[in-house]
Image (cartoon, rainbow, N blue to C red; front, top):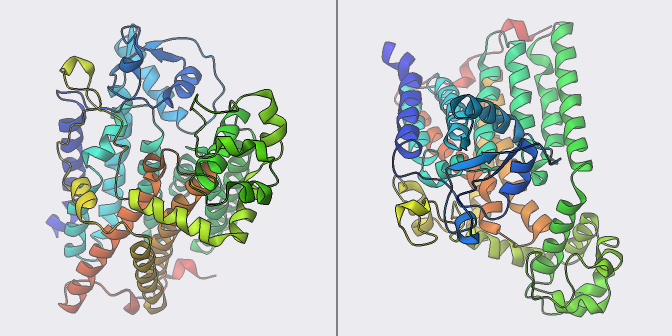
Length: 485
């Protein structure tokens, strides 16, 4: 019993050890900037390291450990700013001359350790086998260097990974608590807020989570609890909508351009026909296949005529209508995206510091067993993804129908919700950003997909334990009395 009780501590200690080894020893492992850092740096009052003077020093080729302090000069609103500002404050105390991005990695690392602890604490309640498999899987998959390297950077991907895991862990905690706590509920919605508001493309998920949050109403029947649930759901819905509504026009323009010219028109067999279907002028045909950051285009992306001819005419609603009328084109893009979905990081971003003497774009593959296995052996076809989803949801539905215990039903629901996040995170980058930077934009899909894979293996271990008489079966336990009026 003591060993079972303490397996979550073992998991947390293992996660801490791997994080320290990979992120806080030599050589420094981070992620090179693809151009996304600046909007976060400006809003957080940071800047590039003055020592990194060349384009190669700052972008694509090498990671940077140190950044300069500066003034607040931006208005890029995202939940990512919360851990960044916390790290900035701690960094200023540690060294007021330069900000060390490893402090941000420490903030992310502490949150990831908490997520591992929460998930294992819930998993081991079913059986020792489930707890052991879950521990091993979390440490092998989500502590992979291709996940952790993002922690030493200003990309938003760590927020997506950490708070997806924390959302699941906290949701499972709520489901299994004998008397669900108010602070646990508040923390659950905070985790969801951090997840859906970390990137503009995630904000529509806030609506889905706000609706699912109503599921917590019957967990307790006191008026204060029900009022708190409704307040949290309403706040999440409102904050998600406001973040999307007040996103910078420049960012929306980039996404629209990528969606049309690097998505719909990229490799189109009938560019002029597609322009007609979208209600756009034929003179834009020359930009087909280009991305927003290319300079060799007939009409510059920020040219005044583009506003009247493209940005004022186009919307993501029109894109959705186009794909509804041309589903084969969407499927084609999904197949192309699926081929890139097994890679956890873009191949063009290095993660060494320049001082290490490595060639530009070199990547440290220490502790990358999962990412290398996934890239080499995981089927990367749309058909396989669809079949896996069918089997996964089929098992979740069967388990939900078999369960008599409320916590078991909610476990199935939360795992299905993770699957929906994965589906959403696969589809939205294609419809909202074309194929631009698709490997990085599929990061949240990868995280959700890996959770689904790990949940499937853990479920198998649990079911085997039940057959052997070593696990609990949720069918035999009824709702606790506190959940009834």
